[in-house]
Amino acid sequence: MGLYLVASIVVLWAVVALLLVKIHLMQKSAKEIKDAFTERLEIDTNTLIDLSSRDKQMRGLADAINTQLSRMRTERHRYQQGDAQLKLALTNISHDLRTPLTAICGYLDLLEQEELAGNAKRYLAMVKNRSELLKGMTEEVFRYSIILSAEQKAEAKPVCVNRVLEESIAACYTELNERGITPIVQIPETKVIRTLDAASLSRVFSNLIQNAVKYSDGDLRITLVNTGEILFENTASLLDEVQVGRLFDRFYTVETAWQSTGLGLSIAKALMERMHGTISARYEGSQLSIRLFFPE
Image (tube, rainbow, N blue to C red; front, side, top):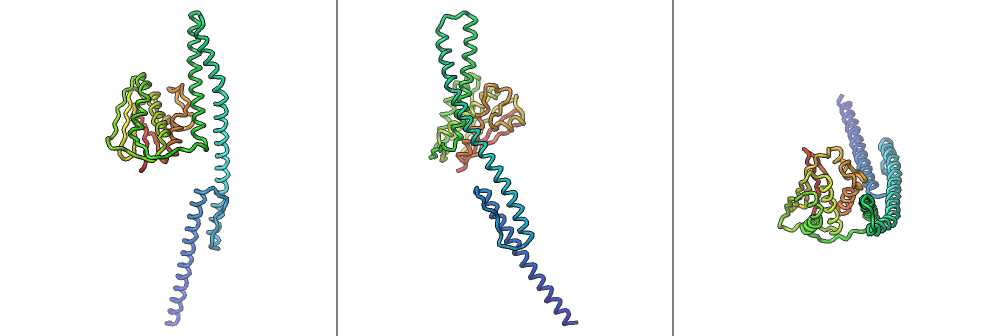
């Protein structure tokens, strides 16, 4: 009886030891899969996940992940190719439109100097107004394609966010005044310094102020916090949560902004990401809040 008990204990310990080894090998394989998967998501490579373990189940898991990685890589390349083609098409189309539009606006200026009847003057003014609007929208599309081009490199250096924000507000004063908007601005005395591209930062601020000009009911609050957070808040009763959720989408416009290309906030988002900042929008109780954040 004693010998049988000892043999049972030995067998039990052997089984436990084998299970522990098995668990250790599975944990090692799981870590290899996790590390390899993370690396292949961050780096565009055709290398597949390979395991040191010969466990059938773990290798099957690795093969299944490799299959999905291959599909995802194909879709990524397709998206990148399509996105590059779209940017090139935007650049070419907007460039081709700029020359004839400039010529049209020039001829309209000459025509204004001629003797015209009352109705002709009125029609000419309407045509010129629409031509200038179309020219401005074409310029916006052209700038968008240039800003997002891979060749453009932002020059990052220490920038005083306070100063750039103040200058951007001052530059948009005329447009704000025409809409009857007197912004409430809160900027701390302490300088908020971040390593950014000053021109890109100014463009982001300008686009957000332009957004307020389009959608605000007549108010605008701009707050800069020492932590690097900037809030642009205004009442926008004509918007809703669905529209606000799409404000950063490329070419998305709402009915209240028929003169817009739908690129202003999309450009702001692209520039924020390039400067390693974040931008988000929230809509609650008719209040639109756009938050920027630049970590130290």
